[in-house]
Length: 49
Image (cartoon, rainbow, N blue to C red; front, side, top):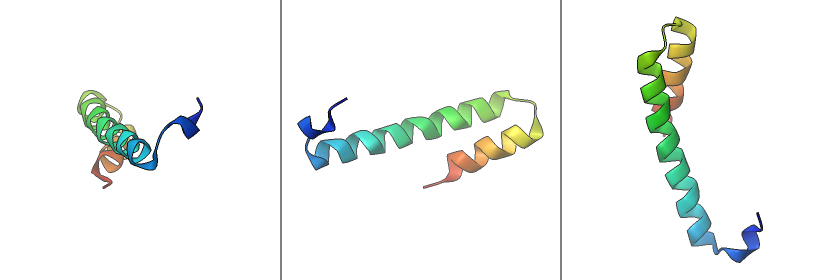
C-alpha cells in the first residue's frame, strides 16, 4: 500500500482506530480462553493505553 497518498492526520486516525479495535478483540478473546498464561497476556495487551 502506498501511504504517500494519505495525509498525516488520516494515517494517525487509522492507527488509533486499529489500536482501539485490537483492544476490544484482546478483551473478547481473553474472556474465552482457558489457558491462564494466554489470558494474562491478552488482558495485559488490552490494558495498554
